[in-house]
Image (cartoon, rainbow, N blue to C red; front, side):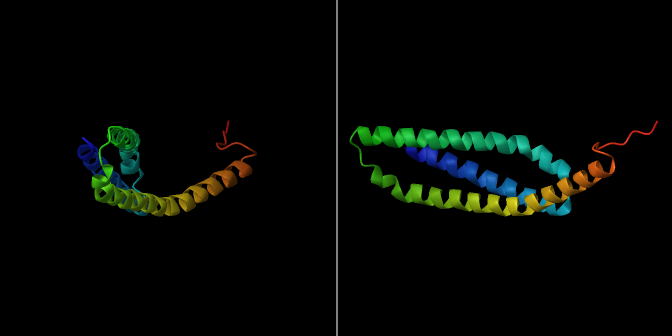
Length: 125
């Protein structure tokens, strides 16, 4: 069962990495529609990743309590850890692209709001 959980974790991690790579490309192209479409799927995948990590911890704990040697999973878990670190790094790359764009939009909105006397939209009657 542990091997299956590790494979599932690797699969979800790979799926998230592909989604983030697509996000990076869409941010560069200002293709916001595709970004929004992927958000729900990514949130579901992140929840699944969290649940699978907890499941893996429980399974390893149960194996250990049963007196079984869990060191046989060390290589697979080490590989999974590398993949999770790669996912984290890739997510950081996306953030480094998105945050400046977010700040630019905030500055534009603040400027418009200031020019309109504190309102984003100026209503002309």
